[in-house]
Length: 162
Image (cartoon, rainbow, N blue to C red; front, side, top):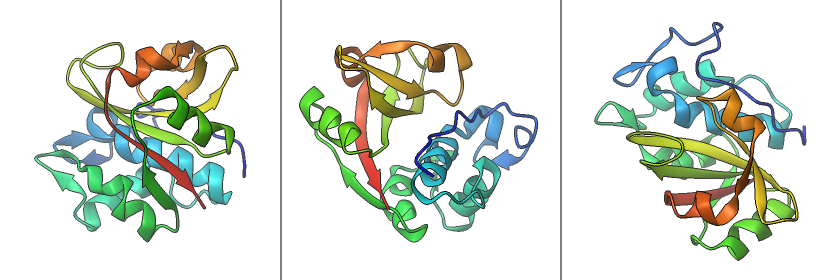
């Protein structure tokens, strides 16, 4: 609890699990991000990416073969997390990160994806950069990212607490 694990869609433990219009490896960024936030906030590991993907499908949080944004609000509530939408401003995002609240971003084409993708912001470095967990890239996870650059690619942002 308190530590945000770096989990990846391509982990052999769950990568081939069917999800949405493909597998967790190809379509499971949303459940993987929510799983990381859940584990960090609750200390529970029952909803790893495979478990969260199954939960997402069973509860109808798939839309057009991909994860619905409702997973980040209604779905989070069903697994015991509080979720709030966050304005796309550095000050707002930073305040949630400083409060220890993981932040999930739905991003469009840019540094993280050619289509749509979810990433998790886990901390601020105090220099305008943030620490992220990109469930589809260990290399991007290891980089510090300019918060403004990340926010410019966001379609929606949610902060989570337990």
